[in-house]
Length: 130
Image 1: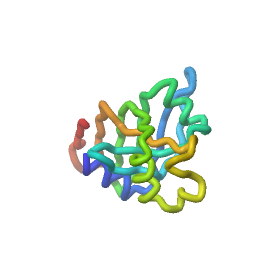
Image 2 (image 1 turned 90 degrees about the vertical axis):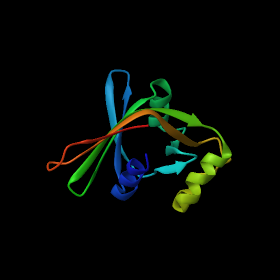
Image 3 (image 1 turned 60 degrees about the vertical axis):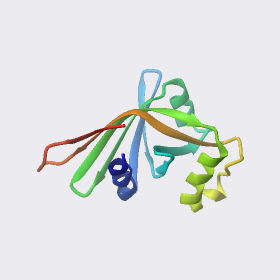
Image 4 (image 1 turned 90 degrees about the horizontal axis):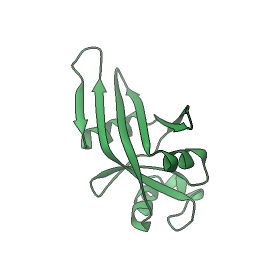
């Protein structure tokens, strides 16, 4: 799991795919946190992406880092604990102008039942389950 976290952190931007009804939705994300042995992402509850993940928690993430890319299939689970939200915000201080661990909008979600594939054109894929 550390390798997956490091890949996403080093990539800087990753793309999160959800569904809305029968329509796929993809958007860039930049927050990733490792907290209590789980990989977390962050958004706002008022955003469509939050509503999409609550309706269908199955997501996919994709990112590139140099000549390598990662694809992650996972389910997201909302964590309402202040500690989880604060840990994310401590690691992304620029978000503190928009979010607070105690507001009703900040949402952190961890990945579960996840499979990550790290690929390149020059090596066999590395498959990581977490």
